[in-house]
Image (cartoon, rainbow, N blue to C red; front, side):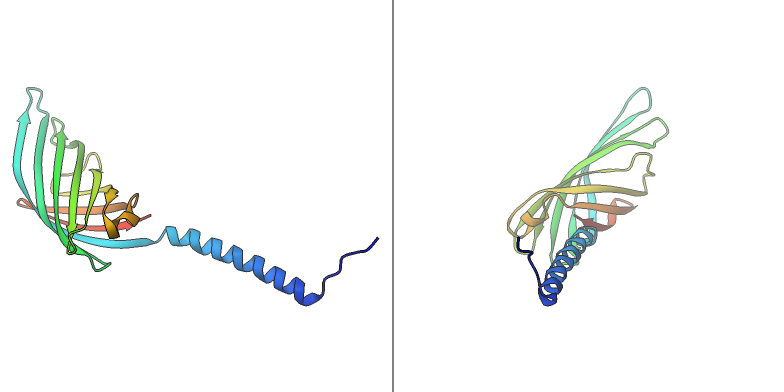
Length: 164
């Protein structure tokens, strides 16, 4: 019966390769938790329609048109359709929206999102997800973005961080 023998340089190479694979795998896992890009938006609320019920709840629908600028050298315009329900105390019960963004290369991506419930009207936080995209933006489908938003009159100012 023959025993397999390895010289020390083969064993060192073997352990080096295993360590390299593990470090690469850990690094890739940590990479997913990093911010992919940040986004700044400014927009204006237009075409607002509100229904006030007898019980004091309000249903509001409006559009937002504006511009965006990212940390990945993409900028352009966007348009959103927003639906909001406020309770009798004017606290947010539900807010959802869909947006279409068009960058400087005329490539589009779409997102759906919602604001956090109970948010104040003038300052809010929420998140959205990129659900579809063209060209450059296809690789960002599934990315989630957290945002803070502030309102001044009918203008929106938002800072966003987008992660995979």
